[in-house]
Length: 310
Image 1 (cartoon, rainbow, N blue to C red):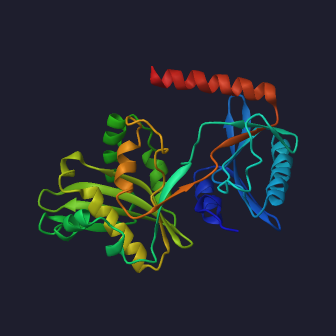
Image 2 (image 1 turned 30 degrees about the vertical axis):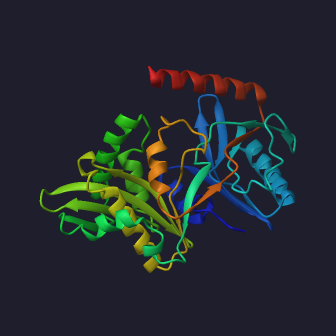
Image 3 (image 1 turned 90 degrees about the vertical axis):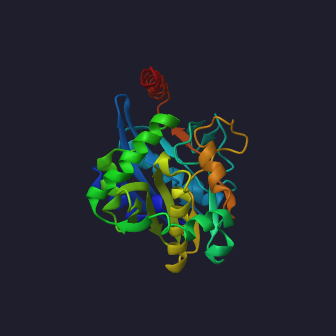
């Protein structure tokens, strides 16, 4: 079974460090990592990019196990994100699986992503235009370093706050990102303007199994003309290749027919300049145990979203 970082023991440690209650289960042909999420209306189980399974039968087996776990923890519903569209094709909005109603909900983790095969040398998969900026980085006083110092996460946070303000997107707190950086699989990259003593770009990457996940990143807009993000991304890819990793996951792109004003439109155009492949997952679904409380939960969620917009 191919397991995502978000369904691993390493990710479970991160969740525990964040104070979450976790459940890790392994069967003959399935496994899952679930966290217990609490709301004013009650609990639910969340499986980021899970469960993991090998067939339709093992998918149903995982759901049966989750149903037992959910009942034991008084959960209203189970939120799942199967990565295998084929074997999870039995998921249909308003259908039933193992006695649980299925409801398509807003995707949490990206449904589509852009992935590079690192079996080729970086010079063959990175855009030649960006490669020229990468080679000129020292002339432009740009230095790339890595860090595990939790205090350095502030550089990423400061850049992301500016980005969130202009793009109207949500970002993680500084304490959350510090906890991520403390994990063995995480590394912070910084692009520094040594002439002006400023951080031009920052990125937080996760290495697990044979994949480098490019989860968090931001750039100072003043360094757009020097392509600080492009320079950083090339370094991330080169280091992953030298480390012997096989895949570079850009972690999320906008849907194929997304409008031009989609928050991820610019990120997606940038990512697709690299010689990668689009990978589609199934998306986020809720398996409902308590219909009445689930409706109340949905109504409360809409109210909270409206409040945030106001």
